[in-house]
Image 1: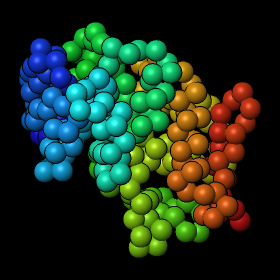
Image 2 (image 1 turned 180 degrees about the horizontal axis):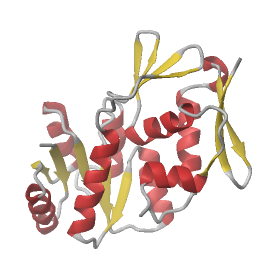
Image 3 (image 1 turned 90 degrees about the vertical axis):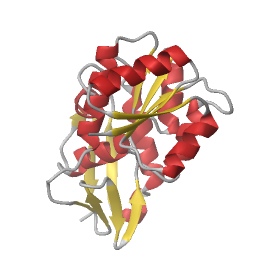
Image 4 (image 1 turned 45 degrees about the vertical axis):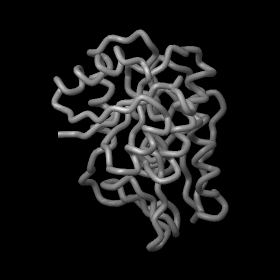
Length: 225
């Protein structure tokens, strides 16, 4: 049974989401403001956070940014702001998925299930990335020797996908389908945003690998000899 944090200042939506996820077999903790969300996250661990954008105190994107400083918990953002630039702002803050309001509860439950599945323990062997980095797929952690680097779930999944097949070209559509799901309807620019974040997080020249763009197609990961 997964333990979820649901954050929304609308009591009706908060109750609807809670009832839907509880009926699906999850345990739910509620919060109605940005500060309450961070307080709850500091007090205990959660398997996933369902997070509204427009919150009292400070907004959901700020909550997301602060959570990402200490946690790679999957974050599904709920918002009435459905435009692509608003979605990209959410992804930039560290969100893993985005569901505009109004939404069907069956889709909410399905997206939560998919995120939990993608972020769950993976029995496959660790993946090496160049001479210095190792990906612990069971815990979504990148190790530099014995030093752990926490990475948001979507970034980790994207890096793992590329690192498991060095030299192979993946289209943006393939990466979106694998990491974000076949029902994702946003822009393929999302892949570019996450690739840039990985490059910033793990400097390619320092760590002996390179994520090479193929214009108009996608990306391949190459490891220095």
